[in-house]
Each structure stands twice: as structure tokens, then as C-alpha cells.
Length: 272
Image (cartoon, rainbow, N blue to C red; front, side, top):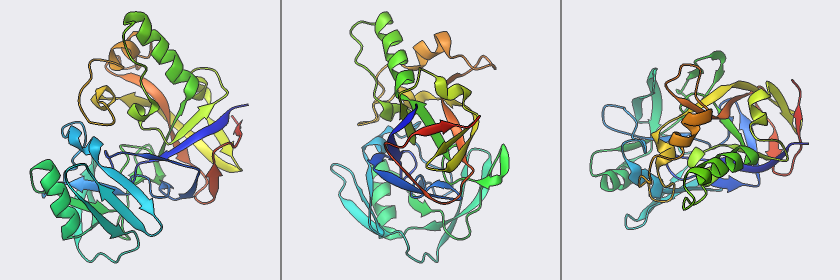
């Protein structure tokens, strides 16, 4: 039976993620996942697609604090529950005019120094409201489109095997390149594609369709440096999207359950 092998969160969009033994759910997905975003003065987000150095930023939850650091750029801490009177307008793809809370001057100075241009860190505060485009009754934070992403270990193993057949010197790609939240073991490769509805510790999740992969998967997740055409080159040979212009890897997921806890080692019941 499929089992939840790992849980990963990315507190700041496009910065490093880390593993969790367990995670709580709320209306936006996994608590603390992609609740912060780095933005320009015009509200547009900075991401690794154009600023690979964000891959070097560590962001860790420590109690009620977010601790942020990057080699050679120092560190700062901000309270997760801090009252933030300064609001910023921001966006994520087609979701424009989002209202987010500013995280203060220390955060702004850190990211401005890192990126070499004016930047602010914002948080999903009380005024933030972003419906999931394809599921308008559900909500999402700063993730690209959906609250969660699920990928199986077998799917990654299959991809790495295909890459090695094309290039015997290629090092296996790690799961971190694909930035999933839920990593599953004990199932066939791409079994997750067929799961319309699953349950983990009686918490229900609904599939929102395959995840289209972008250039970020070609970046080293430790440095943000481009490493070559993989995995997009190999994915294009057997995971081409129906529109023919993109490739798929992993499944987007909406959490039907808006509260509760999930833990690694839990079995995954395929409800539908």
C-alpha cells in the first residue's frame, strides 16, 4: 500500500525547502508552506526562474519564528504571528492585486542585498485571499497554482533511469528539484497520476491534475545554477502534456480537509 515517505515545506516561495516529520493542514494547504514571497517594489515576485540565487536561501520554522539565512549574506528572524501594519499589493501568475503583509526593514535589506535590487518579503496575512483558479471554493498561498504537489519515489527513479540511458555520466536528480510537498513510496511509477482522491490519516485530498514543469527543474536546488537540459529533455520524450508545449511530472493536489495533521509513515488510501 502507498506510504507517505516524506513531507516537505518551502516557507518562502522559490527558496530552499526542508523535511518535516509531520505537518498541520489549514485552508491554504500545509501550514507554513509558501506563506512568504519575495517581491519587487511593483509587487511582482522574484523566483528562481530569473534569480537563481534564491536557491541559496535557507528558511526554517523555529517555534513562532521564521529564521532566514544565506551564505555570505547574513541572517534575520521574523515572528510568524507578528502584527504587520504595512500592506503590499502582489501577484502570482494570473492572481493579481493580492494583499500581503510586509515583513519589515530587516527582511527588505537582506533580500535587497542578496538580489542586488530593491526587494521586500511579504506574508499571507489576514487580508490575503487567493482562490484556487480551477477550484474557486478552495484557497492557496503563494504556490504557483495549487496548495500541494505529490510525487512518488518510483516516478523519480523511472525518470533517473531514462536519463542515465541517454547519458551514462549523469548524476541522479534529487526530489528537491521538483519541490513536492508529499513524497510517496511503495507504489508503481506514476501511480499518483491515477489517484483522483486519497486519504492520509483520515485527511482527504483531491487531485487537481498534472503539474507542468518549468525551467526551475534544470537548476541545481543547492545553488540555483543551471546544470543542463535535464530533466526537461527526457520528460519531453514520454511525459509530454496534451497541449504539446509542456511536460508533466507530479500531481497537483487540493486538501479537501482544512484541518488536521499528517505524518510520515502513514498509509495512503486511494479512495477513488
